[in-house]
Every structure is written in structure tokens, then in C-alpha cells.
Image (cartoon, rainbow, N blue to C red; front, top):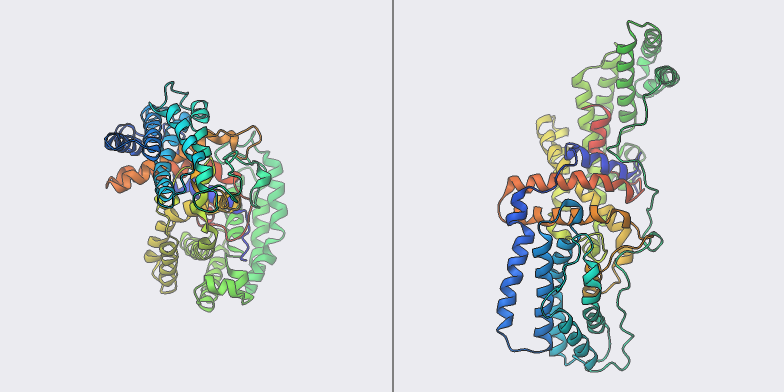
Length: 511
């Protein structure tokens, strides 16, 4: 495994914030989304299916499928105009739209295999009586479970029986049908990677820093810089001994303090970022995983690192550095970070299709248009451009990766936490549970329920805008999604492997 210097969750948060422009949290969705977006389209689709199915002959399967569509329609129609912090009803409606498809298939299979046993028929009949006219009393938009828990209870029982394995046509030998108890597990039930809630990425630091204490920290750090530079380029050591002495002296001169602090801090950020680049340690140790991530160009990359780092050290030897040397080193670091991340992405996304079985995630991952192979291809193109001396070509691919990688990693991190719990759960039963359930006090992410519901609505609306050819709206919604996901990313995972550090690197050196 390739280790990153910082936690992946923080890197994802930094990257997401940069991609989204660290925008302020205003209204999430423009009016056109509520007027003609995904929720409106889904409600219209449900209405057409209700009209079509109403003309079909009655029966247990048809009646239950029709009633479920009526419930979904009510949720969509009533939840469409809800404010950002009350999207749970609209999201529950979108879940039930997808549940309709799963239910239709399960009922068709049961009828074809003569598995529609009396217990299933009885449960469906109870559901039809409860939901024949949809939702009689609309629940609060932020708490649809107040109505759905009771209305969907018999349907959840029927789903459990339909999804239980056993001999066709009877319940003999069939394991007891289990209705999923909750869609919101406790953290102890999830996969590894938990972390205590960290600071809000957008929060301001407490109080003003003490200039005197900060100067002492600068002086302490500078003592090790000549040796650090010598490890990169031995002839530059003595120059940096003199340079750090000059900076230290300037810190004591009122007229020079501000400029000295700015220069020292800039160099400190660059040194920390460029001292050891992503993949570099593995490549120097001939690590097979690092070589694979570098697409077999490890020797060429190490040569590029050595040459560019030497130029960067020389540029700083007069105490100022140059924008050109910093930009070149930054480009190299970001390409390496992209290779590191894209190489580890695909296996970490495995099983992400099961995320919908958790109560917080409501969008099919396929709708997010995350394509690991395309991301890997962009990394390869950036590498080839870099090694060919085509800075503009490398920057073009990096800009595209800035948009694609952070969101992919956000989903990958979430999948690693959720999938071990979600994968064994039944498909239809889990969708119904996610629609009808609310988090308990000790549920993982339960206190952030409204934020996850809003992410689900944004994801659905972005996919709809993209599918209908409204590229500007899709781009705005994706940026909004990224901005809000950034606030949840640090809470998901503490893993430090193969971090998406491209944007974090850029921010560190003040690009």
C-alpha cells in the first residue's frame, strides 16, 4: 500500500473545497431545479404509471405496485418545494421510485415461480389498504418517516418474504424472513476507518496568533533547513546556512519583519510539500506498487524529480525563489499525486453500488458519472505531457482531474466504511428501510441527516440536468455537491493511503 503524508479524508475535503471554490453556503438549488428538475420529472413519471396501471386488471401484484407509486408520487409532489434542510421527503420519494422497479421484478418472479404464498399476499393486501390513496396526511418534509414507517410496514414484511431464500411455492425450510431493522447503523457496525469529528473545514481559527510565538517556531524550524536542502542538493547547504541566518536577523528588525515572515512561511510550505513527493519513496525503493502507479515510468520520473528539485533549490538560493521553479515543482508533485490516487481508486470503489442500502446515501453511484478508467487515462496523459516537457498539456489534464478525482475519492471512502455493512442486506428491503427509517441518537452520521439528504437531492438533480443536456446547470449543481460534500469528508474516514492530494498540494504552496 502506498502511504500518504496526511489523511485521505482531509485531503478530499481540501480538494472538494478548492474545486467548489470554497463557496459560501447559500441556497443549494436554483429555482429551475424545483420547477423542472429530477423530482418533478420523477413525479410526472409516477403519475403516468399510475394512470396506466389503473386501467389494468386488479390483483395482488398490480394493486401493491400501484399503491407504492401513489405513495412515491405524494412524497415527490409534496417534497419538491421543501427548503434545503428538509429534503428527506423528496429523497424518500426518489428512493421509492427505484423501489417500484425492484418490487415489480420481485413480484413478477414470484408469480412466474408460483412463490406468491399466502403470507406475501396477505402482507400486500394490508399495504394496499393502508396506501390505496397514497398518503392521507402529509408528514413534515424533514421527517417523512412519521407517515412512512406505518404505511410501509406491511410492504416491508412482503419484501422480506419475497427476498427470503427457500423452496418455491412454500415457506417450508425457508429461513425466517427478516425485515431490516434500520438503515442507520451504529459506527461499531461499519468497516474500518472511523475518526472522531474534526474541525469544520470552513471554520475560522480561534483568536489571533501570537506573533512572538510564531517567530520562535520559525526560528526553530529554520535550524534544520540547511540539512534538509543538503539532502536534495549538497552544494547548496552553506548558501542556506547563510540564508537562514539572514532571515533570522530580519525577524528582529521591525522594518523587515513582515516581508521576512512572508518569505519564511512561503519557503516552509514549499519545503514541506516538495521534500518528498507522492510515490517518490516507493519509486526509490523499487516498490512494485509505486512502479505500477507510475505506469512503468518510475526511472524517468525519478530523473525528473531530481532535476526539478535541484532547479527549485537553486532558485531559492538567493532567498526569494522564482514562480517558474515553484510552478514546475508543483506540477510534478500534482501529477505524482494524481497517479498515486487514480491507481488506488478502482479497488476502493468496489461495492459502491450498494451504498443506497444505507439511510444517508440515496443516489445510484452510476448517476454520478464517476469513471475510474477515464481518471486513470487522464493521469497517464498528464504524465506523458510532463515527461515530454509539455507543461500546458499536463496542466490541462490536471485541471480536469481537479474536477473528477475529489468526488471519486469521496465516494470511495464512503464505500469502504459502508459496504461491509450494506452488501449482505436485501436489495428491496433495504431501499424500503432507507425510505421509512430515521437515524437513532447513536446512529453513525445521524446528526448530519439533513446534509446527506440534500446531497442526495443535488446528485439526482445534477444527473437529470446532465441527461437533459443542460451543461451549465449540471456544472453548477456538481460544484454545489462538491462544496457540501467537503464538509462531510473529514468525518468519513481517517485512512492515510493514496490520498487525493493534488488540490491540497496546490493550496499548500499558495497556488
